[in-house]
Image (tube, rainbow, N blue to C red; front, side, top):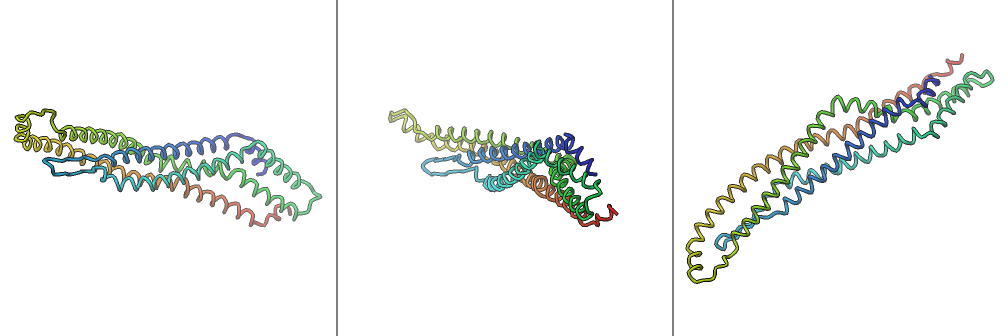
Length: 287
């Protein structure tokens, strides 16, 4: 077993697979974090848009972006989850880099080869052999636990979590575009309202009287049109908000499982296996 560990220590098979999966996990987490912050930014822009209507001196201000308040709060919490997930994967990435460092490989191999030589030596006591063998088991655990954990974690992700992530992140990016377009529509409506509520440049007495007589019907007509446009945008905004909430919650579950729970479970399983091997009566091997 120790010779196999020495061979795999210098082989790039496990290390390459582990690094590939951990890099993919880090890229996915960081990309999702950026997408969430971008959605948060565009929602903030929409929330800052006010539609002010002052027909015949009666003021009324609408803030359609208030519909997105719950979504914005959820995105803030989601951003913290993504930041924690990205940080956790980054720490594991550093641990992976240390384990595949050439000097670390030399130290691991030297320790394992020394243990093999002591196993074959007839001048070393059984107690000393058992000690070195247990120490080698711990070294093997330290060397291969991180890449093996990420290989197993990647298999679970691709089979169970990957499709759900791909669908949710696609919806979030599409929602970002939709809300951005709605925000542009709101700004256009706000500019139109400002133009309609500005006084006319005509200064003759007849013009002022004529505008006074016609202003009520004109304002009512224009506000009716704008009200229809606003109602349509509000329906679209509510639909986008309800849709993105569901997928944000799904992504929270995906990354808590992928970046925290599953790696801890797999690592704990390897730890229990190592603990079991250390608890065996290894002295029987040398009788």
